[in-house]
Image 1 (spheres, rainbow, N blue to C red):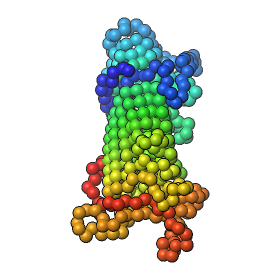
Image 2 (spheres, helix red, strand yellow):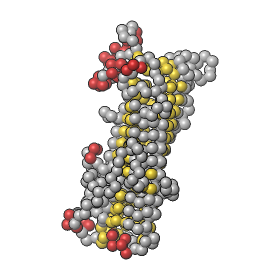
Image 3 (cartoon, rainbow, N blue to C red):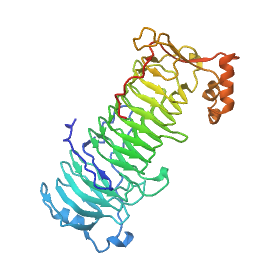
Image 4 (cartoon, one colour):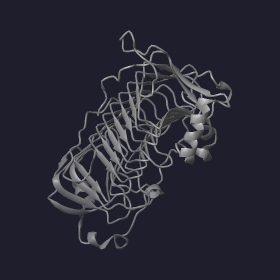
Length: 437
């Protein structure tokens, strides 16, 4: 396996968005078992004649000419100005535009394809990609290993950082990693795109990024041991989603206002071995949503020291597989603290672990002053069972009629309540926050 690439950092330039990606792209063969298959040959990028491109680029000098004339391993410092794309870099070069070079592809195809390894792309502005999802039109398509891309401004592009002005589902992805490992994605702003995607890509680090008004802030699929730390994700449909993954850490992030029909701060689908710690999950439809996770036998998902506040549902389990350990979290202001999409045969015997959490609806005392409630905190579902078992009834959750039914159920139960959780050592005093706030 190739060595971890050198740290590459991204600066932000005024209101424009900058992109950083470094790392190595895994060979197309030797796909791990169960991870799907990848063709041995990538689909070739389409070519477009000059007359098919926007007229604004017709009089510009092709940037490809400068690349072709530069010897391998040399430093290319183009004269300031605008150049026509597309451009393919197939040899190691250091290209430094000094922040005064623009490459424009005239709204067709991919602006720059980096097929070389050990190259540096710095201080340029890439703009004007096409909008085809079939050919993955983008501003920058990185295919080599150990490259550094920094202080690059990208806009009016389909795949990276800020998408074209389209409906959410047909926008380009803000950043896409595909069979690409050991990357550092740091200090970026990704607004109004579709997703940040990491598929079949392992051991990547997403640090100190900001994501707004997109679909998935980050979507992992068959992508193991990735780290998401120190990011802020606002107004996206989903914050971070793990699908068919093993390992991974999500820590010290703020995920807020993931709302809508599928609004969710963090989600799991048949994933295992993840650690979720010291995050602020606030004002979302669902704080954490879990489906058949952890999936691997004897594995766990650790959820600790997080704040679940003012969400529709703090944590929603669509299955009770066990293996989720909820330790020292704060639950406050949620319409529903914890819910299950159906217990099946597991009624009144929760398999997950709850310990040392703070519950703003805890009904007990701390007479010995040790900071732990004197009695066990038990959460039961009364009338809430209706919307938990019947998704179509979720529209009426927290409505006056449901609140009345819930009151009557608690006063004089006419059906057996469903035990959701039992925390034997609930915190009595709300702990001081250690996550970002």
